[in-house]
Length: 401
Image 1 (cartoon, rainbow, N blue to C red):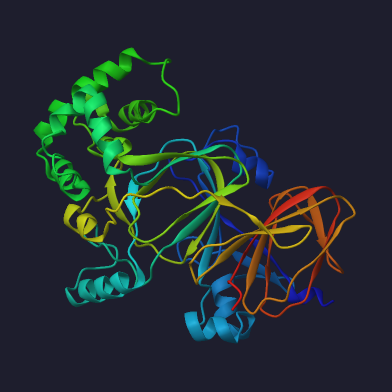
Image 2 (image 1 turned 135 degrees about the vertical axis):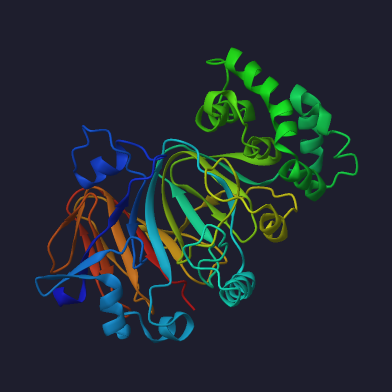
């Protein structure tokens, strides 16, 4: 086996304020006594956090390598996605909840990006909704117990929430026709004074319940939102309403979930691996200091009720499992090996990125990769792995055709 056909990959860490202090530093073997937040580890060719590859004793950006050698991506990948990596692979440690958000589909992204380009809106403008012309489906697999919001709840459940939560009873008339769109539009367009009038009593009530709320209750996360997003008691972030309107989902370690176009969601707490199409297109609905474009959000959200579908990885072999999704841009697989066990990879038509989450593994004929280390596999490359220790890896690849 030619060692030079596998490329050690050095990821980029994003130190967003919501990140945890421990998991990613431990994964990478770094000291974090300064308690700096380590939110995301990026593995890919995204310009805001491009990974570096080692080739012939040199370190070069992965994107530059792929531009110079598009054959590493494979003919099928280049035909469908051009000479760039179609996915971005991440490890996330969510200590504080992320914003309520959703993403466009491919047609919406292309039309919106063209429209804003023609309007002359700079790419770095805060008024910009479309940073590129791509969609951004996402799949995640939990490494710890993981909590998130995902899709609108059924109408009957929302009606029950509006009846049971004292501060939200005033919204019952708005929801009398059971229109989720009408209810959401009303709270998102509501004057700030009215938002504060509804949410301030909730803020006071939940403060009094501190320590008595459970994560299975939306009130627990509403209290967390008030803690993070209400400076000095107000003004209140209308994203709190979404905590009660969206499904609250617990994903256990090893399980996954897929976020398709238009599905409102928010990561609340936990550690996961995430794989997504390479895009920055996000519509936010609150719990953020960034732009919230209500009209764009209303135009691109899917208001149909969602029954969250937890993904159980499907076994491909004794050592490999797949998290199947409808996205054409990526597939997430899991590999678990015992010490001394071998894994023969299927030949892929597209590129792959693998990261070691636990233990140590050696591609046959190559040096060992330990916890936190990653490598890039070119399209069509035949390789096998040997477990030097009990180990867990995740692999990003393209779906087989």
